[in-house]
Length: 181
Image (cartoon, rainbow, N blue to C red; front, top):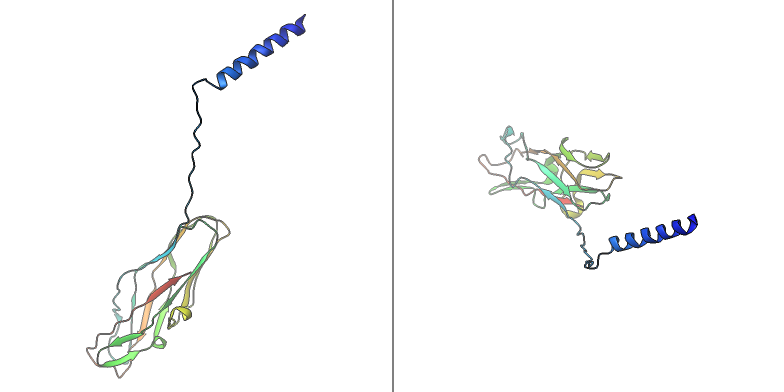
């Protein structure tokens, strides 16, 4: 006698649940999106004066190049390295060129870092920039087992040995190129 009542109550409860779960005026819409891969990029100051030390021929001059910032928006744990090179060295009209062997790039310490997990961020060893893309001197590396975007900044210093045969008043310039990979 109680078995029939329990069965009837369960049947009614299941029927009410089904009716409440699927209203007669409902419709489904499938929503999709695709993620895109971010990029690995570098930002640098457009120009920098060397103004520390002496500019007299036969001496050394140096200066801070401004902030260098690598931004990795790829979202992976791939890591990166960045190198520096100069295809021209320093040149001046009417004065001897200063090859990359007379230039020292000093990476300096990281001044700003945003990264997930516990990354290994390592500055390179000070030295002459490479002569081309293939010989770029590695100035920073980033390794992390945790995936996610990251950003690292530093303020490098460039030191240049001015040849004793440089013409007084010569204005030297060079293009320093960064390659992030």
